[in-house]
Image (cartoon, rainbow, N blue to C red; front, side, top):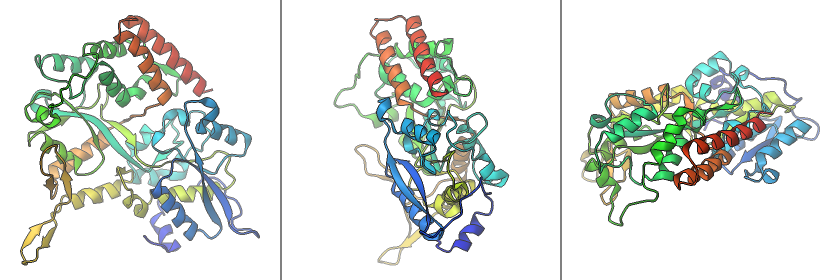
Length: 437
């Protein structure tokens, strides 16, 4: 970690300033910037510590906020009230629970101008666009991972996406006895599909939903074709289900440069296809924020100093230290891929040279499998997934609870398909309308 301010400023030269700052250090010492944090993140705390070492005129202090399904206890609503009243923090970390509803009221600054053209180019533009709202970037993730479905290419073909209709047709064409994925039953299939593609059905900018459309009804109908409960015996093996080709899909999270070959190993070395979640257009591979999601409060009186912290977290040294997920800065992920393609060697006590394992794949009931490097083809495949992803996977817990409540009536036969879709549409539309007021 570099601790010399001038070096940091050189590295950050591609990122511009934002707004007006305060006067810096006064007679009483450094100006205190408050960072509202949803969760206690050691990585964020380390970056705050570094900022406090580098900045002579400013100091960040973290204040904890907590999410809650009860409006009177919810930290996001509390935060919004404080910002409106002029008493809010300078910085915000929305954390792993971030959803678009956190920023639809535009309580935070648009960071597009702060980043500037060079700053946006330094990051993955499609990742930033996926987190944008009304063409503004009101919160920025420091890291991300991908959520998708993967299966044998011989079963799925070479397509990179599919609609719900194509998913249903492919699954039904596999013949009886093959699982959609291990552990699939009505509510679980519904939750898995909607967790991955919930935001696909919500247009936050227009304040509209499409849960009463034909596509969503097909999702409900498809999920209702499964068993109402988990039907897996004690001797069931997830690994055998894939090795013996008894399951069509495997839900996956891709968050390291080695995950791209890990899936092939689980499928016993056969060629695999990352098909994604069912959507009508675009890529079905979804983006999920990983780690801090930072924002600059709209009423901060020290915006330049606050932006300096976000810029620090987006710069190369900080991006290299992300504990999990992919860095949003393009050059750092490219470094990771280049390193992963190189085989490293060590020497044992007898002086014999041997390759050093960089990653291990844990498969149930077997010894861990070592990964020494990835191929150029695998690196290109991963980059294709990253650069092709265009939508966020976000789970707004209030909306998710509406899904579970209403779909349960349909799956039990208490409500019709049409009634269920209409009620979900009405309830979620009301929630979205309230959020954008």
